[in-house]
Image (tube, rainbow, N blue to C red):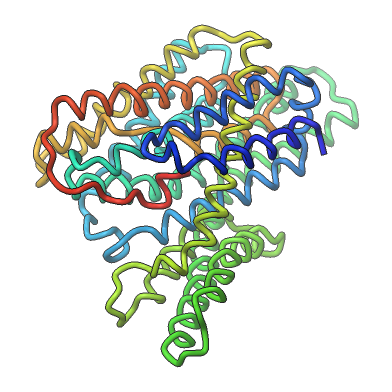
Length: 437
């Protein structure tokens, strides 16, 4: 095990001992762990970069995202869309695509050195929302309950929608340089021809395989989540199952689902499958019961596993920040990130909610409360592992600036504005598990 990760576990353990003292400040955990990572990585910057870029690190990151997506889906209360189907549909199917498009268009002008597929990857890294940098906002008595529900449900669904787009764009971005080089070359060696054939296969699979992979993922997730959800409800009614046993089930379901979906014989999108499994598991587990959500004592283990995984991710973010600063970066990436955190989130949200039942004040909150966190880090690390070096470090810089900027904007600035401008509406609500990620 690299020394940096060993030290990271020590820091996370020590932070866990005192975390309760700072739990009212939702930004404290991410900030402390990120700062620790930024400092400790100086022990071995090169070794850390190599470790994070390894295949084993990639698989760990994928499993972390699968668990977090499953938890997000399980946390929704009240039907598939939390009772806000029309609003969520507007945000996910109108606002999110407009935001992605805005990032890509801005990238075309500001980052001409990157091809269109890398820009799509960057858009997918920048735009997923996650409430780790802004957990205090979801607890705030000044935020209307409906807005909290909409933001929490949207956070899960936009991750689920972005993941197949991200996978398609990443595969295309990897293949594109080889294809362009082959087109420009007069003669190809046997080795280059083999590489071109491989890249072309990946290129076409990325485009023509994305839809089937998503469809298979929905089927896999629905079947596995539904079977386990039904079995848990059936066993619980008869007194055969207790909360500790069910907690193990809930931790294993996203891992099983992701594993089945990514079998070569299945070829499905594991992230979509894990998210769908969470939705269907929740629906079958709570069907014909008084609870609208899964009992908290059953969710506890997968919540805690997700929180621990998220803590590791925050530590890695800090270390990556140091890597980016030492390696150097293009200042234009900062402009793209600043636009993505503000204008490219707010304007599409306003446009998508025209004519909706939400008040203008609530629309403003939904637009400005769009923090970025664990999903951005995970997508960024996956892209860093796969892309060629030049593009990989640009994506890495975007990831770092996005999350650090979100910690400052959504974890510090926006809460101050809300506390000064918004009246107290209700007693503070407990933050959902996804907010701690």
